[in-house]
Image 1 (tube, helix red, strand yellow):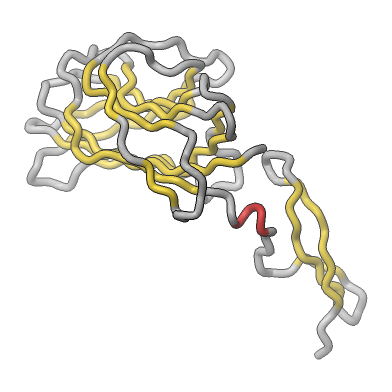
Image 2 (cartoon, helix red, strand yellow; image 1 turned 60 degrees about the vertical axis):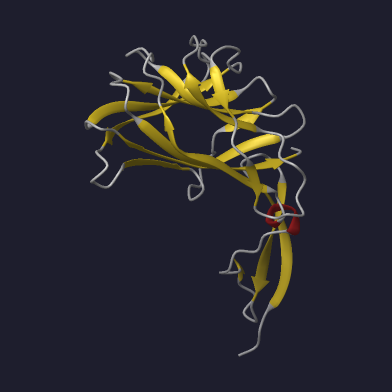
Length: 214
């Protein structure tokens, strides 16, 4: 069977950037998009980064009301797109907390924060410009962005050391919808906890994101 002509068509992605797909016209003059995904080089080479921490102690003075423990801050030079965030926890005594994903309008300026190392998926990529950190001592809360405050809330069990740790995954990489986007260094995506802190809880997390100049 003869193979039809292949041409390219331009489409817009969720960020209004132009991408290229292949169009095939078969001998019967019927046109259809090629069944494989055809992505241009600009998208394939978008820098990806990851950071995280293992079993950091949750501040025992954390109030029972919503309080941030993880913060992802945007960049003054790049657009940051959060692709995936995985959180798990253990405690001497099992407990249940609400874990909330919140978009905020400023980074925390008080409290004590630890900044883990950032790893690029490609060592040829530029140094990441987003900042990821977690709180080891409590600071005051920051007002949420009124346009897009709470993005998601889930319940997580903090299990004992002899059981599988409670885990929550916020995965935006497999969705055709928009992922959380941070434009400018003032925008942050935070993980907040609501629950009673016994003083023996430990959390682990990993976050994956991309950076582009759109």
